[in-house]
Length: 116
Image (cartoon, rainbow, N blue to C red):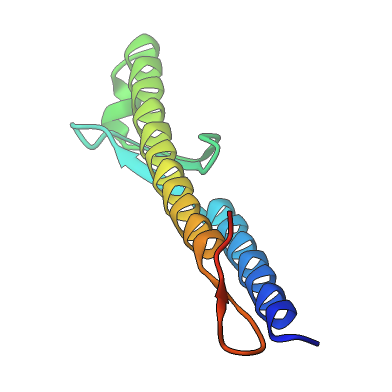
């Protein structure tokens, strides 16, 4: 196999590994937010789906309308945090993938070939 082919295969393997790591990170993203008065805590996954809800006795005593609003507002804040984390990961992934794509390939004689 020529140096160029080996270099290309190494790049493909690095891209595959980066993609696998991105997938793993995205599936592991979560966020937990607590309301300002500490009465409600909500945990969400990377897609913003609620995975946990904690209520204090004070939250339960506030009445159904207030409690519902507190849960919705806290869940929305947690979903925003998770979305921010996902955006950060996507930007980092894009930058690393571009760097791999733009790195020169090495030929058998030590010369390099620049990708277009």
